[in-house]
Image (cartoon, rainbow over all chains, first blue to last red; front, side, top):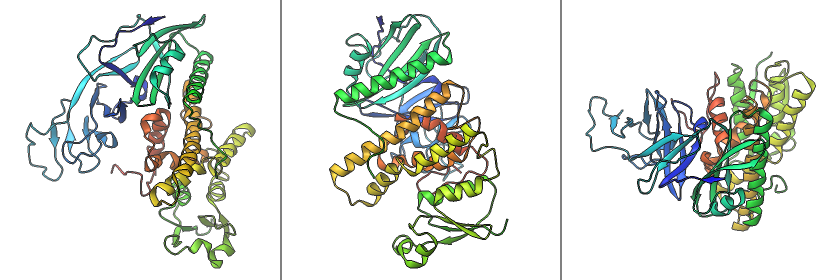
Amino acid sequence: MSGMREGGWYPLMLSADLEPGTVAGSTVQGRDLAVWRDGEGQAHVWDDRCPHRGMRLSLGFVREGVLACLYHGWRFGADGRCVHIPAHPDLSPPGTIRAAPLRVAECHGLIWASVEEDGPLPEVDAAVWVPVRSLRIEAPWQDVARAVGIPDGHRAAVLERDVEGRVLAALLPVREGACMLHLLAAAPAGVERLHDLADWGQDVRARAEERAGRVFLAGGVA
Amino acid sequence: MSELVLHDDELDEDCYRVRLFLSLLGLEARRVAVDVVPGGEQDRPGFRAVSPAGLLPVLRIDGQMVCGAGGALLALAHGRPAWLPEARVAFARVAHWLQFAAGPLRATLLMRRACLFGGVGDDEQSARRRAAVGALRIMEDHLARRRLEGGAWFVGDGPTVADIALFPAAALCRDWGEEYSAYPALRRWVRAVRGLPGFVTMPGIPDYG
């Protein structure tokens, strides 16, 4: 087992979960972010707030390689600058109108954003990581970290769980008492192994939420 | 096929399931509005004579009335193996998801109505939310597993009537405070449904134009 030095970097989501030309939301310790991928495949992470009226940019859409707000259609380029205002099509928007980009890194099959200080990029043993899945867990991230074997003070680690191969586990603290657990398997990993790890993730979720006194059982309530 | 008639409420998720499926099939139905809010027409004798449990929508097909979303979806899918597989196990899996949509998944619909229109206490709300989140997670977990074996849909290699029955609960979950960021597999699948030729929205589901 080895911990990773994350600095101020947080694992937002699996790279595989952000298709080119799409935008998704993410939350890091209560701070809402818009995560989007442009036409060239580059990922961008901004504060989830349109500079125009404060609408959540994560509800918008990517058109012609730029991010458009759902509310009034203002469009923003990769550097965060507004490039088009539909209500004033002939206007060249001033450079002061811009979204707030964060530093982004994409490695080990995950999209990371630098939210706090500029620390070093996360380091993981060189391997090809196959995405398994992400799970929302309504329990404190530190409790989940302990349960899966991530060393104290770390948010990600390579786990030597069993003889079948290594697992990369990364935790995103979403808000008080809620986190996302991302799981990846060292290649090669067949379908059976991936299914086993997905089952393990669900088991981790069920136990952590039981400890936190939060049980989500479908059925029973009409 | 004789003229299709849909007795329909624009704001109702069950009616939307059928409108969406009609549109994906490229079929037109004459729509007759049922005055649910504020009229309560679904509980009046005239409507109950057609739909004894007050289930919406009612589809007139082949000159007969079929009531409820599950029945209407099956009536439209019948004889279309792409949407309703004929192989025994695949057929049963579609049936399972239709039952799930009409059973445990109702918690999401009730939760949404409670959030939009009020009328329940905090304790009840909390129990209802746990049941609704539990139901969404069953869908999320299933799609996450399907993806590991290369599948993008609930049953088989393409969209079936099960995907249509399940879609509104996922697409409308933001109305009761659930973010897609907690459900990455659902988010990808919602996007795939949105990309189907003939896709239409309902109020609460954004139209990107």
